[in-house]
Image (cartoon, rainbow, N blue to C red; front, side, top):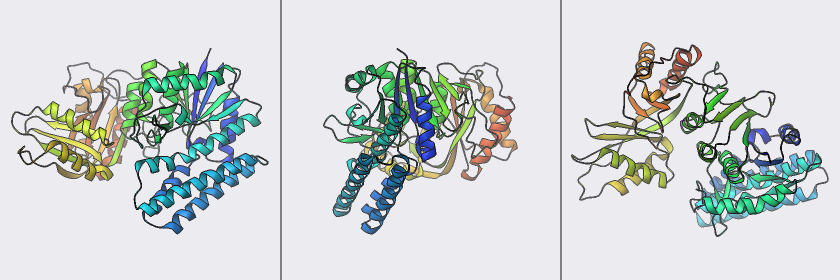
Length: 481
């Protein structure tokens, strides 16, 4: 039995035209696969509107959150009216979900607080509506389809806005619920991004987590392939919005894509790679609006040559936090401890820079997380009797991540990149490592981040000038995350 999991992102489902394109793509695969599973995101812009309602409710602005809810109601009913005339059940569903939104927002306003559980419930509403839209599209094409809420399938811990699935329970639920549907020839259309605790409380897997949903389902069901449908042709050598001459990468490894996704590239959710790699399931990134393009194949293999740069990406709104260690403290132990507590609080540590000679470690975090990160580190690492200095916030930086097969293990990559940036008037402030030998992270001044990416891309990616000499590592690799 050949099984395909397809995920459609918000841009692929953001209009009547896009929804119909997605429906055509699914129906076009019926004769090619024995079993098809669809994962659907919310329509483009819907999740942002939902969270804006919660934000205004928290601010006590009832008129504004009700106004946004009204705009959302109009958007959804207008789409349903144009596409599904006579489908009264869809209209009732929209009314029910908008009423739920207003009820939760009113509770937030009355309590003056928005719990993580409240925010997860609100964020999940877009997917919970859109699976009914998409399933109706498939049924209108003569296919058997059923909307399925992933809260019935993916059992998670209680970290409501960045939940971790409990694998054994999730595998059991997925097989028990979906196997009979698939055996009967039904195409389940499943909410992306959503899970639930064992007690049934709604959780989410984090923004962009619908990709992760697709990979979880694929691993549990032993799928043959995963197709991620988006609005670009595949994984690119850089962000086309920043680097107009970026080009498509035809084949890339799980590790390289993980590095790109974790370091700012928006093409995939980083956690998507974990179940796909574990089950050795090839993943394809394809363009809904250019379906003839083959896209990018992600697997254990890569089209890049060892010790060459295949892609470059960046984060531009970054703060760093420095810890000074006491004599005799184990730098690597402290680093692991801090990374663990940050992860537990849902704070991404995007890079770690360390200097053994002055006994310091520097953690790079998004600017909007820096206060929480400092407080978390202070509570877990310092106390009055320890004699340790408090964590210090440093200036702004841009992080540039260069990705390629084992480039961390080549001394020539850093040398050549440093020379190129220096010639362009760009000083490298710090150098660190990513999550594997497939990445090197550089910190530069914020205003020079985009220029640095363009310089690296033009010299090493487009012109193929990356050195390929295989020498001893210039740094001992210590995974950052």
